[in-house]
Amino acid sequence: MIDRRKSKKIFIGKVAVGGDAPITVQTMTKTDTRDAKATVNEIKRLHIAGCDIIRLAVPDMEAAKALKEICLNSPIPVMADIHFDHRLALQSIESGVHGLRLNPGNIRSEEKIKEVIAAAKDHKIPVRVGVNAGSLDPELKAKYGGVTGKALAESALKEVALLEKCGFDLIKIAVKSFDLATMTEAVKIVASSCDYPLHLGVTESGLPEEGIVRSSIGIGSLLMQGIGDTIRVSLTGDSAEEVKTGIRILKSLGLRSTGPTIVSCPTCGRTEIPLQKIANQVRDRLEGITAPIHVAVMGCVVNGPGEAEQADFGIAGGKDSGLVFRYGKVIKTLPSNQLVDGLMEEIHKHLAQKKD
Image (cartoon, rainbow, N blue to C red; front, top):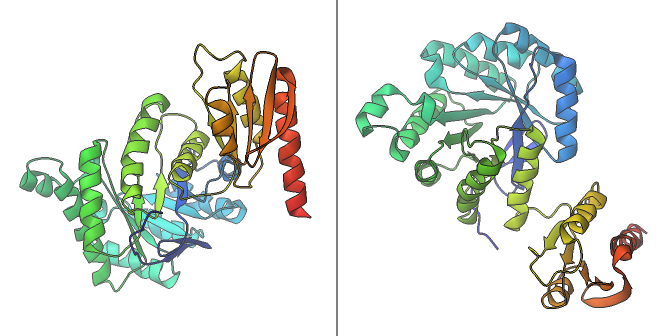
């Protein structure tokens, strides 16, 4: 069991972040925010994938105004991502967003920041203070001799102090970098300096095959230390894959129990069934199940039965036949080409019994 850092609880819409709330998964839409219909459709797709909170880029006033229709039709809380122009933040609030992502240093006017924070306070809208390596204050970069963890942390805490000066404490903090050592150092400094909830992510982590690894190491290492209240995996690819990867990270650490977890062997020369094909079939047929079940898909009699016995359900295949397990007991022996059907029959029978 991971002992989580004690943080202040805030609400993005009806979704709790921080405190004893479950760690949430976020992503950003990749549609043009000005196209409200396309954006709502993407949000609905991401919601089905498991996204808890969605963030939208707001590059201009047309996009800020389109947020009204989007917020009315979104099944999950909407955050507006604002840079440079404080008027976009004010319009986004009027359009009904549930939170703002703001880098006060990009606005560079204390009076304009005060105006935004006053509106956020009136509407009880949290603000995520986001500092990235790419937007670090040049003075801090010079002070620390480049982009360092200490520089990022000082920048974030400096921005937070400005909001606190306005009497505002509905704050969430994110410090991100592509470099994992820099990112983790910055987050740990911030975590030890305040009790605000923290958003974790590795910025510009790359194409899926590399970005998933970088994000899993960076985000996962901090979560294992109890640090982090909400996460976003950034990939150059489908945003639904970002959400699914985030959920997988949480499930692998025992921090989320929703939906099936598949345990499958990597295969070797002993495998006598098309295990990869079978594992993909099991994954596809488990789609839509939200019960926290562990399903083992094993390919031989060496480790297969032992691993399958430790799962809620499992199959262990041989050349001509295989075993179906349920809670450590062999339920039936079936021809290899019927194993998936037999496994799913037992899972659905179990779910129907629990429902009754």
